[in-house]
Length: 313
Length: 281
Picture 1 (cartoon, rainbow over the protein chains, first blue to last red):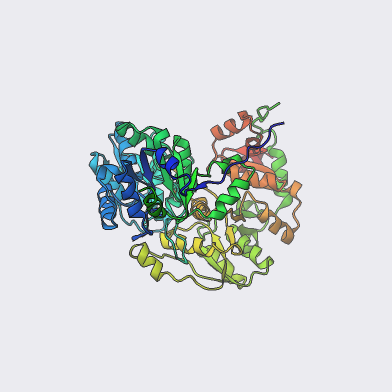
Picture 2 (picture 1 turned 135 degrees about the vertical axis):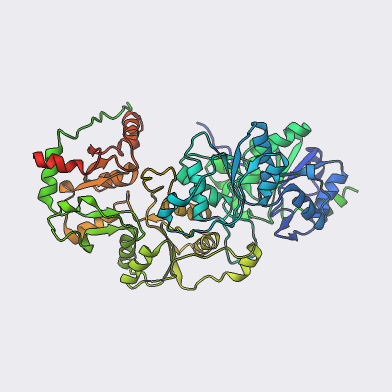
């Protein structure tokens, strides 16, 4: 009779396990929304915590599924909020998409459903793309096949976060993807856009991706977490060892699952999507898939590391 | 042991049986998933015994079925519609309040939107159908209302695309709008349209049709034919729309029994082939 292996709740980092925790990694991959900041506001002393880890000799990477900013824009945001950061340390889903297409030797045009965060990264690697922005419905939808012209140079459709998403854009994406040779790429599939303290719920990139996927009737190639592509891109460049790398995140079905998929250590903070009740529910579940969402370590907020690290000095 | 379906291509052999049903039943119903007002004229209507053409009670579209469902549930609050005017007018006919249809354009960034968008009060159901005015603010409203677990989530239908009719451009269907919303709210909608049985149940209540003496004709296996199978009707596929002969061969040779459910009892290349067959009958 096989006994069900009971999963462990993530270990709260305190003074008793702090040294062991610090000695287990040389590199840090940290998610941004919900861990370091919420919108344009810093979360507690997250900046001091990350900068302190850097001063202890850890290599830092900022890893984000958010496709709406280019790496240059992320560096500016980091600096504004007091994080030490350089362009090479930013790993965004838009950047990974551009790197992936470059590695594939892609030499056609990309139909972009998304923002300048995506087009700027494509420009950086010299890949042609369509313009972004609104395309509202101006005729009856059943008259569109007569008036809409598809760009014949398009060889890939890339879907990211797009607040200008519309029926004509959906129709273009779907029509390009009729050609089975046309690549279908998604920057990420997060269901909700991270915004806290709001009565409203904002759809994430996943909403647009699944919309296109429904009519394309084939799945996209996903660039962002939990896909391992983000880790592949940086580990090739910097020779990162998975067993010496820590992933910090707030969303278990992307960040922590990404960490597990890549064989990294994982730390969940409770300042974003995942709450303590979620962790308790998953640890009691008989579904082993839920157990994969449980991180190794846990902290209420990343800034708690600051006081903990002081105890070592 | 899993086996491929022993499906043949019976059409000439059985067409005399079909025609007897068509003439004998003398009541042709138009059962459509389209929730918009874009109803194409139906060429088979001439077969109806009603010489004056179709009457409204012969048309069952998913917008009508949705309104009837809400009426039967004694729904007395407001509906947020992510859909077209077909849904709005059917809700008006049964006296159910709704938020209206049409465009709502993106204004400013998310921070600005967050300040400006006010959700309508009293909304306790969200109905999603084909919406050519799909936009970010409309999706925000739909998913925000659906935060409340008691808010009903209804889809008129989940058809993925409209038949292309020779164009190289694909017109996405209601299924896309539904998956936009379903992805965010992480719960499935109640689907009113085909392949669900709801529309046959409605027709049956009103017209007392015998399922075994009823033929469902459609062009899409995974909505029309599956609807027919779910409602225990006879089924006929025409090849002038979504499903192709290659699709049927694929379903027949599949070991997945769910694919076998997509095989019609009969097929015709085009519906008007029936005209010549009936002349010989």
